Amino acid sequence: MGEVIVVTSGKGGVGKTTTTANVGTGLAMLDKKVVLIDTDIGLRNLDVVMGLENRIVYNLVDVIEGNCRIRNALIKDKRYPNLYLLPSAQTRDKNAVKPEQMKKLADELKEEFDYILMDCPAGIEQGFHNAIAGADRALVITTPEVSAVRDADRIIGLLEANEIDETYLIVNRLRMDMVKRGDMMSSEDVTEILAVDLIGVVPDDENIVISTNQGEPLVGSDSQAGTAYMNIARRLLGEEVPFLDLNAKSSFFSRLFGKNKKI
Amino acid sequence: MGLADFFRKKGTSSIAKDRLKLVLVSDRAGCSPEVMEQIKNDIIKVISKYIEIDLDGLDIKITQQESETLKGTSVPALYANIPIKDLKSSK
Image (cartoon, rainbow over all chains, first blue to last red; front, side):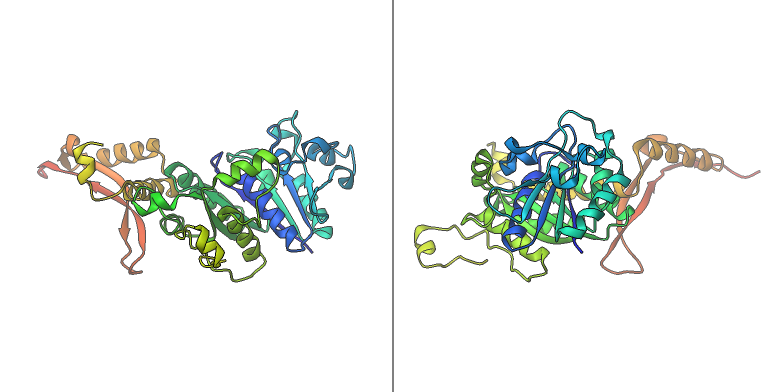
């Protein structure tokens, strides 16, 4: 029996889709059977981040409305045979789907997949309620900024109200140089304010932009963000993984001698 | 960068943290500015029956306060500072 994990944030542009793509791919790399669902109806994005935009035939709304079978709408990933994407509909609006329908879909997918990741739209309206409907756990994404943290707090409250008890925090786009000079809240600051368990800290890394340009998730690569995402996937599986030492700049020599590799 | 910025000891992250803590207290209490305004008006109405209060100096807000039962944790509290102008003498 699989597990449904919703990736949510409240505020837009903090990295929900990137996180869904990378954590989902990470879980697939760890030999889990994974399906990623883009629940942002009308603003489809997970397909381009995964580099699968040219393979879409059917979408989430087609499945919900019974125009096709689930298996016809699932797109197999290019790299990992146990990773699938259920894309969102681009030309429909978010009211095309109801929370009960999403829950039913999630329950069906649980039979076949180990992990079902729901990429939630920004906001707290219908789309949010659709995405969390069948969720067992939630990953709340925030950046160390007042607006994102405030929205994350609101989301955490709504998740509690909807009886999703297992909520984990990911602090995204952390800049250690700014934290050090006291101009950015640290992951500890954010965790203290939001009072939920921290499951990952992802540094601001230009490699994310580069990998998104190419439609290839970065997870598992030798970059800081790639390592951070793989660590999140492993923690989701229950592994005890120490947090990355983001202070350590990986110089040529340290890389050569394998120092700094606190994975 | 001005001279004031140069001598500024605290980084802006602590400002962010303090502001967030305050805003989240009222967010979590589900208390919108309109509701606060209503509470304020009702309090004024009730107290004015007995005491003449200084409306300009009035300050009512939701803040964070250390819990008396659970040491080290903070709880939201309704804070009211109501300056008295005159006690209305009873007949």
